[in-house]
Structures are given as structure tokens and as C-alpha cells.
Length: 412
Ligand code: DSN
Image (cartoon, rainbow, N blue to C red; front, side, top):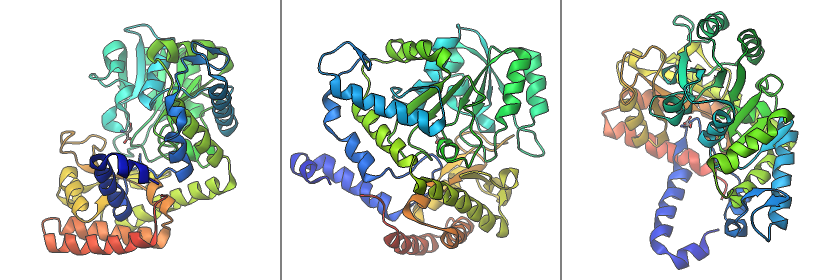
């Protein structure tokens, strides 16, 4: 696929070769990553790269937009069909920009907004003090309950009544349970707040009905397109038709200039893939695999935050077994298993040396792993973490991981 790049620029090609080797031979358990199909990657590396197209189909600031107009309409229509949405904007370059466009369209600086605390599974763009969301708006965090490590809707309601937000942001980067979107809608109605759902992590599961959809309940839904949805890196906004003009204006010219038409092409391809029946089977396996991994680790004495998972990810409290998430991440890297350290709710440790690791099944499921292999992955994780300073054990696991990955190729 990259023959011409190799001829043109060997330095970059060599870095790419090494990355392809890494992707082939490591087990990718980062919950927000996936392997896009060759068709998605080809669309992203296509001649659409060359076109400027500020504006929207039929209303561009440049000539020569007839074919990108067709393309953007295909992408918007597929996104609407996939999620049953009234309006779609496929131009956000990322999830962060998708979120920012909603805030820009609907809020004024210092407006009060509620979002799930980052330390409880939320996201930087849901009000972290160093992110523009936290700098511009007065975000108040809500949290999971200490004993269950799950959201308690009575607590969320009480908090909403206390602070009277203009908007409630729902969604997470590290929450392994189902969101009750109807309960959030009811609370928003009770306090007269707008409801925004950032479904980035679960978008693929929502597309196939494996997680309830926020679309009927929320005023605005944002997502990335590269996580469980398995498309190119990028963002997407869905909203009710009555907000379409304000949202489109916020994306362009509000926060972006020219759209990345090559990425929009790849989004269109991935939405087309997600509309096919085998995507449903894939999401089904994503959940089965996350559950199998959680069970395998639980059986070996690892504490899983909230007791398990309903979706594609799980949080393991490695501190309960005497190590930091950062130490666990490093040891697993040496064993060929890629994860990220992650805070857990009410974490006694700091963010760079937190108590947990986050594991996800989307990428390995794309490769074809099923429950028996996930059980084996759990065994390797257990062995690597218990022998985290023993290079010989980590090296032995690395070789076993490599053998397994040979049997499950990545798309290329
Ligand atoms: N940082 C991404 C994740 O890993 O969940 C979300 O932006």
C-alpha cells in the first residue's frame, strides 16, 4: 500500500514501517483505538486531500466543489441514517472540536454547565480547568457513587437542582456502564437545561443498538469517528433540525476553516461499513470480549471498577494489588500488550501515577480475537503484572503474544 512513499521519503517510510510492525505484533487494548479498514485508509489518503471547500454543500467559498458536495452529502446522509438523527455535521476535525462547536453555539462565557468529573471517567473537554471548556465556562462536575462506582441519577438530579446549569454534558472516556439517557433528559427538563451527549467511546455500540441511543433524548450528540465506530480520526455532530443552522455556523466559520474533505471521504466509507450487518456482529463480539477479559482478570484476583463492564472497556484497580497504573502500563508494554494508565473514581494517587489501567476490546476484536483468546490475554496480563520486574517473564510473554498476533492480521 505504501510503495510510492518508500520511494519518495525513506525516513518517513521507515518510521511508518516500525509503526506497522508495532501494530501487527502488539495487542492493542487502548479502549479508544481501533484498526480502520483499508478502504477507510485509502479514502483518507486520496485526492480529496487537495481540495479547499470552506462552507457547506451548495454554499461554498471556492469553485470546483461539485464532487466534494456530493461526497459531503453522502457522509451526512449516512450519518443521519446510521443514528436516526435529524441533522449531521461531518466537518469537525476531532471530538474536541465537535464539543467546542456545541458550547460556542449554545453558551455564553461563564455559563454554568454540568459534566462528569475527569477523575470519575469524564473527558478533558467536559470542563477540565486547562481545557477551553473549563477556561470559558463554569463547569461543575458530577461524580459516580463511592460504593457502586456508578452514576446515581438521584445524586445527579440533586446536583442539577442545586446548581441550575444551562447545559448538562453526558458521556465519558472511562465509564464501563450503560448511561440512562432518558433519566438525564428528565433532569434536563426539570431544571430547564440543554442536554448534550458525547458518545465518542460508545458510538459503534449505539449504531448497532448494543447501547441505548442518546439521539432521541439529547439536543446535541457529538462523537469521534475512530473509536468503536472504526472510522478515520475525526469528529461528528448530530442534532435536532431546529439547531442545525446554529451548529453549522459554530463549526464553520466559528471554530474551523476548510473541512478535511479526505477525512470526510473516509468518514463516509466508515458510516457505510457501519450500516452493514456484519458491523452488528462485530459490536456484539466487542462486548463479549470485554466481558470475557473482565471475567478472566476477576477470576485471578484483580478488582474491576464497578464490578465489571456493560460495554467495550474496563478499568482495573491495580493499586488494590500493590502497584501503580504507570508501573502496570510499562510492564505490559514490555510484554507486547498496549494499555493506558488511568485514574479510578476517588483515586488516592495522582493522574500521572494513578491506581488503574483502562483496557478495551475494540481493536483486538477487529483482528478477530474471541472469548478464548481474551481469556488468554487475561492470563498474560495477570502473569506480566505479578512478574512486572522480571524481564525474562515479560520477554517470554512478548514472544507468546507475537505468536498469537501472527494468526490475527490487522487490515493492511
Ligand atoms: N483521549 C481519548 C481516550 O483515550 O479516551 C479521548 O479523547
